[in-house]
Image 1 (tube, rainbow, N blue to C red):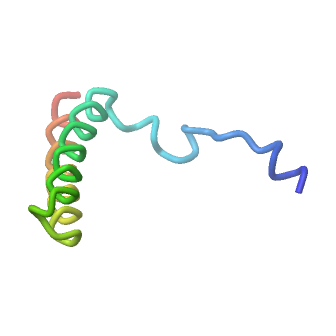
Image 2 (cartoon, rainbow, N blue to C red; image 1 turned 90 degrees about the horizontal axis):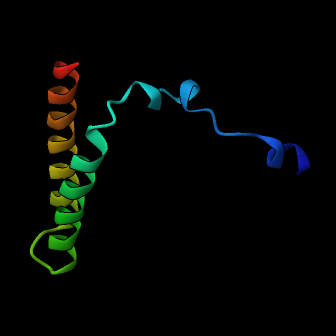
Amino acid sequence: MEAFYKLKWNPVSTGYSKIPSEFWPKFRDMATLEISQLLEGNNSTEAALKRIEDQGNELMKLELQKN
């Protein structure tokens, strides 16, 4: 088990380093709103996840076009 605890997370190998930093706060705000709607019973889980995916993809496209 010790070998697993020695592993360090490497953002370069996971591809996270390629995501524009401006994406994260916008994504977080959008996802928080969708999750709030879900918890209030205004949306189904499937609908909330679909909207998060769709809007997240759109946000990513916009941020990548800026760079």
